[in-house]
Image (cartoon, rainbow, N blue to C red; front, top):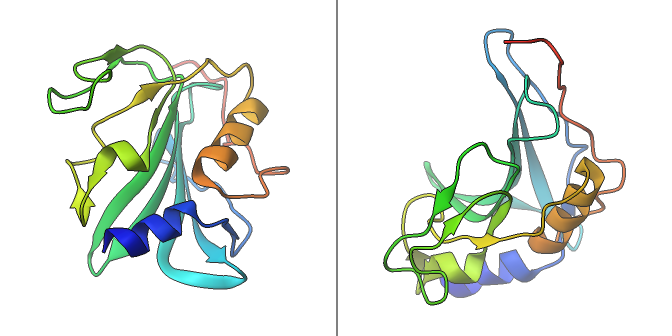
Length: 165
């Protein structure tokens, strides 16, 4: 299974439909789920997911590349931008990432979170620190590069609000 999953991760991908953020009126989060194409063909179950806190503009944004296997969804790569909490890598992470505490933006790369034919843990436990992106557009450029997906130019912004909570 890893060879085919790894092939999907490494292949250049594009959006099968225009990505669009959505929210429910009773939710503090805006979400985005978009199917992906490889060489012009939509790959069943391969998705690009985004999540952002509505009331925290320019922070606490997550993008994820994921695949569905039947009823289960497996994350492949994740990038957390300006999170509000530190991330701590597990004891079984490879050196030099073992037990690292990461403050700020970080990437959960495929190659550090998959072994053989399955992920090493739940929700991609191993992360590497990233430079702190200056803007949302800088973030999108990094996501496009890390996920090998695009084009990211013109990608929509989350529906952030400045309302105090």
